Image (tube, each protein chain N blue to C red):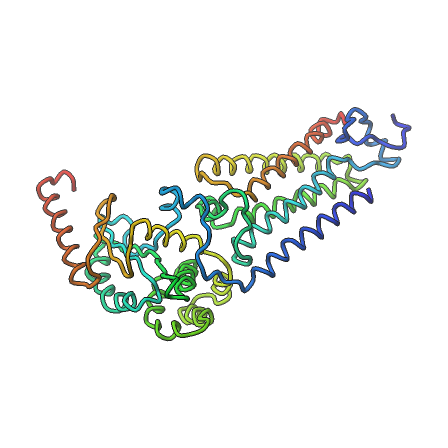
Length: 173
Length: 240
């Protein structure tokens, strides 16, 4: 493996290629596909969260809410945490994930355990938070906001996409 | 890799375009009419939760005076200027009674009433609801006759010490449109016929609708309820 000039991305569907990242860095390192997925999904998430944030700040008009009942969800006490709109926290979270994913695509950081660890931590936190808010919509508020559901789906995609990072953290990828 | 950055760029352009379109299209678009509440209309519990009133006085007071009012209605103005100050001084400030203000803008005859109700809720965001409420009724004739009173509302907010920019941002949006609409729907479901309508509620359950909004009628009803509570407490001191 040490003399190969390319490395199979750990997040690739083949998933088994793996190799010694240290030695692979000497050749051309292909960026992990899973981090590309995290980057694109996070960017979409930023716009979804920005849209909700612009609404809660009164910048935009009515939320487009073809499915569900955004009015009830946005008017509920759970739309803010300590006075901060949940969407603002979402924007910060998605931006952090995007930056981490883009950083992790750079050759110098492909094998970085720190990037893997932060991606895992961020995606896990986001996934759990989304799960909590989905629970609130289903069982406490009894209303659905389609944009919150879309955000929860995006977070689930991101969480699934960072699973290969666990292998990188263990050092077997 | 270049394909990835192309996809990222496309997502960025589409996202900026979509959110930007909403921001540009939404800015300056003050919601002046009721909005669709969706399934909230069908669930009384959800409607009551969304139709939040603005409370004055002790939130835990045993008795509540409820008012359904329209900022553009002259009788509401008279009530706010002449009768409500007496209720405040005689009952609200004692802590035994609180006051719940519900919006009921009669939008078919008062074109600025919905915006006015939203404006007052925007003032509430900055902790100045009651000052703004009083100011609106004091200046009712001035702004009612204007083609677009949004500028006057913003001036009032600034005169009362609120942040002009924050107030304007709130007003030029649909913020609080759902709450005001829910207030209106609640009034309809309670068969409120006109404004101001005054009700008295003692410890939950059904509220008693008063035949008139003058201070004499309201104070007589409150005195009777409070006297009954005092008598009940005197007979059963353990409840105190």
